[in-house]
Length: 77
Image (cartoon, rainbow, N blue to C red):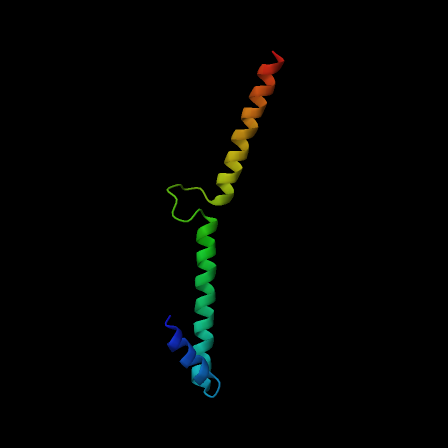
């Protein structure tokens, strides 16, 4: 949102209930936008994978564990 417009609404909100409601709604919308942005990043942003960050991490750990296990087994033979 335009900073000048936001500042105007904030200033008018100090003396007007209608503007105060509008300003509160604006603050809530901006907070939700920030939450949505962070949730998108948690899901690996626009990566071309159906996995989210947690799933990708667990898959990587599993693959690494399998590699280590295979190395241990083959070294004991």
